[in-house]
Length: 178
Image (tube, rainbow, N blue to C red; front, side, top):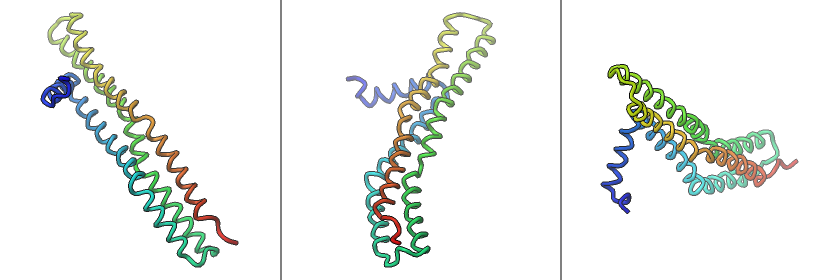
């Protein structure tokens, strides 16, 4: 249960971040931002989505005219508002998911450059020195891939949920009465 101790956890995190080089810190910031966007979407659907739908439905129900071209435009505008709100930040989540492994590869490349630079300066081609450097260089790739894989499901989930909610809203407010 030592890992539950905050002091031990903090020192382990610092050791992990220092073992992966400066790019690993950027990857951890990216992970924090990514999960903040994912949690924002979850919070939106849990707290704000239903009240917004109720407001838009009552706005449509309160209209006397539902058949004119103006009513058609207002109905389309209401549906569009649902589509925009449900799709908010999904593209950002997709971008961050794609960026995480690329940042990991950047960390690996910079780490390998560092390994070869150290080997050139020391004049040694020691297998032990190379193994330690390669280990350090691969940590950012592992971190980037782990972050991307942990969040890979969410953009598709939020897109599907958004399409489903938009279609449901369009059905619920009904077509135009002819």
